[in-house]
Amino acid sequence: MAQLFHRRFGFFFRVGLLGMALLVVGLIILWRALTNYPGGLNEALDQPVPFSHKHHVGDDGIDCRYCHSAVESSAFAGIPPLSTCMTCHSQLYTNQAALAPLVDAFQSGIPLHWQRLYKLPDFVYFNHSIHIAKGVGCTTCHGRIDLMPLTARETPLTMQWCLACHRRPEQYLRPRDEEFNLDWHAQDQLAMGTRLLHDYHIDKRRLADCSLCHR
Image (cartoon, rainbow, N blue to C red):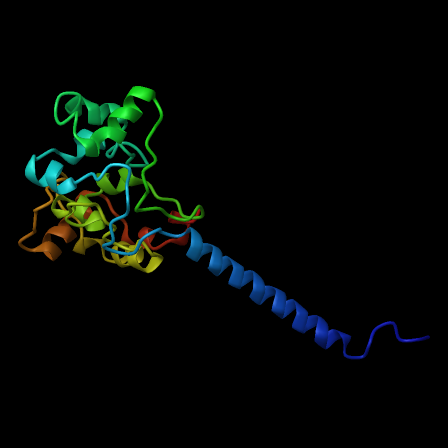
């Protein structure tokens, strides 16, 4: 019986499979690079309105929860609705050119398209409220937002970055009544954090479990 395939068919077949696998991996890496954060660390993005956290939070003293009202109860902190902005800006600086897109969007009902600074891949589960409930302050992930004239991404949110906190949470925890105090510092972070681990019923072994974030 004649041989159906060349005697080196198996070799070429395996090389072909390896090439296809490398191509798929390369395409995934390229896709991640193109769909990842539009800007780098500490790099402000162009927004429809040049919103300044330094002015609103640092200078005027507006609490984070006034605009991000669902930050303690929702998995997603949320971008404030235009109605929140207009509670002040229907009276203050309404005719300023920089605020024209905000006013026009509110009057027309067409939402503004803000560029998100922080986003995670679809295969990562993240719940904002549980971090607040367990004593993680705003600045741990967002940095000194009250000092930023234009908002920039402070932290990379890579898996290694998240695991650094999950493996040693005592280095980052703070009392719940100080979570929104952006200028707060512990006198003895390790001692306080170790105590809060117990008070907040945090199991460090569970925090490093893959299924916690990859569901």
